[in-house]
Length: 363
Image: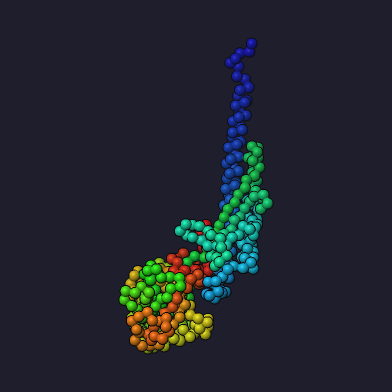
């Protein structure tokens, strides 16, 4: 009988098993690495496509009046134009050597909740564009494997998603702030906002609805002469206001009654906006804190859009919320506008809100 201790052939079997394990490990390292690189490339394509689509949405809003922006429900023609931009941006990118095509059904329009990080599909005043990019059967083809084919894995499916959003306005360029008004964040923290009346004059102590002030932006010292000069430039189409960034920019502010030249200048500015744009939609900086009689320099934390509804003539203002009657002297009032689009980039608090038209990547 052969010896039970004869181990000839065992080494060959163990070597075969070891080589199989080694090959499987190599397959895992090489093919998983290849798939991860391809996924990153696919994500880049999704990011580029979403940003391009959201920017095109912003361009559409830029061509609309504030009233049209607030009632906008994206039609099929605008959808098709945005999808075409999305597809062109994606196709300019490769993933594992394959130019990425995006199906129309993989582009969605909606809104983005930054707190819950949630995309909600809607056609009504959309602010976000979401794009899925895929390498699967029927859409760009799956990612082929190399060594993993020996263990029966010939390909890998990869999907990625990106969302770009027109966020609440946080950066404005030169000449975009078009009024001498500023509003305290206390006004918004007191429950006023979208659709609410805001009164710039007269200021009523203890009344949050009049927690506002005057501003000459970067022009100092703040006084009636500085203010009149700035307003007159605005009314002549030569807006001197600087760029501003929420959380960084400081503006010169003041409060109290204006002199007769300032009231005349304000009425001229109202007429200029009506003649040029049909109405005066003032992009207004919101300053930090609860000071309803601002003075000196205040920090801008965001921006709101106010449709100016009444500018009274010079005179002693009545100590009441009487601007709505459009009969009071010394009185200026407006209405906070909802879902309007104006300015450079987002990321600020939602006062109104007023949205930017240049998107940021949020997912």
